[in-house]
Image 1 (cartoon, one colour):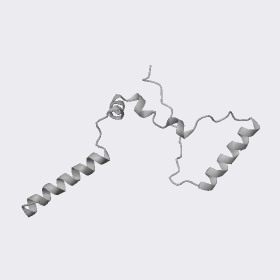
Image 2 (image 1 turned 60 degrees about the vertical axis):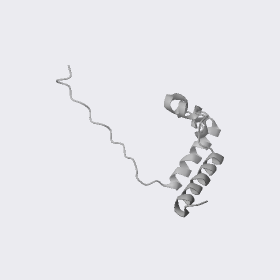
Image 3 (image 1 turned 90 degrees about the vertical axis):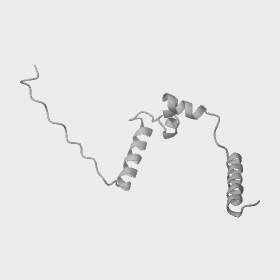
Image 4 (image 1 turned 120 degrees about the horizontal axis):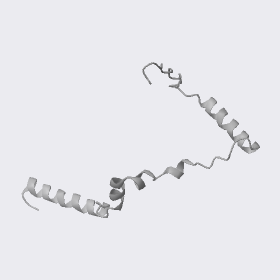
Length: 95
């Protein structure tokens, strides 16, 4: 079967390392005009639509977001003050 068939070579797809902001703006303008004229379908996809979707589908990220025992700012400040008092007592020998 596959022994006597030759594979087709991959198509060359050039990916530019450098982007042209002018070209990107022009392409966006052309797409917007075509969309207004009805040649292209409306673009309903927004980048904000995908925000937070990853954590919904991974169990580990879900558990991390549902945890309630996080170190809060007031607790962290109290801990820092206590540690500073302990350090001061160790260095000076008295409160």
